[in-house]
Image 1 (spheres, rainbow, N blue to C red):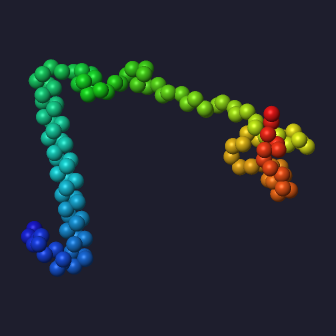
Image 2: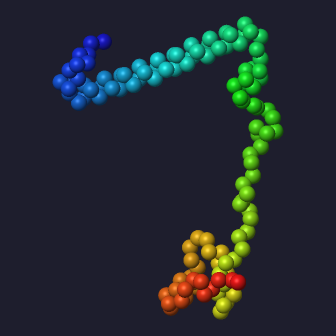
Image 3: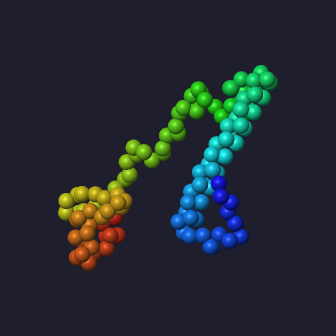
Length: 122
């Protein structure tokens, strides 16, 4: 591989810089993977010689698996709960919770100059 004069990178063409950048990024990722593999191999060796089980290691690192609490997801509070209507159309009895887009009947009343508060359910 050709040596790069790091003090004179500005003299290189854009294409050459892009080529070096791609090669550097690839080498960097490969080195990261290699270092992780070496670290994991060292950990495995220590675990094997220490007689530590996978469950003990996982528990020490704060992981749990195979338990009901790890599998269950907390339920959402609002899912499936109906919201009470906040506004009502006196002519038709149609209601609106005040969430989402305004219904057509509410838009028509507002165009006539009425306020939303006039239709509040009390």
